[in-house]
Amino acid sequence: MLLKGLALSLVSSMAWCVLFNVPVRTIFAGGIAGMVGYVVYSLLPLLNAEVLLSTFVSAAIVSLLSQVMSIFLRVPSTNFSVAGIIPLVPGSLAYKAMLAFVNNDYIGGITLATKTMMVAGAIASGLIFGISVVTIVKGARHAGKRAQ
Image (cartoon, rainbow, N blue to C red):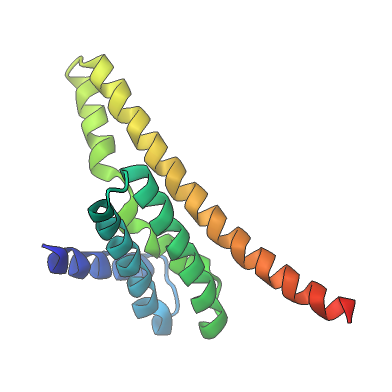
């Protein structure tokens, strides 16, 4: 099951790279970012982590990986981070929330919609966290050079 998820996350992330017209030489790297995010998201629940924590950590790792790959491949990190979070997007949860509203189950719909927004917030927070860590590290490195 994990192998199937790895393959699907790789293919879906690479498809989003193609959709967003990233340079051809970076398409596979975008797929790797999505696959790494999926691996982290899949393995953390085995360590008794909640869904929100798994989503946050995997989005943060995707963001950090995107920053590193952007330095090595000399392209914007957005090329990798957008494709990398695609396997994390709570699409089925949002679908179930809308389906509950259509079926007049308003309490269930509100519950599922709230969970969807919390997962989306965890993705956004993880991406911002990764960018912040890289920015702080770069700033500290440059501050050390200025102090000399």
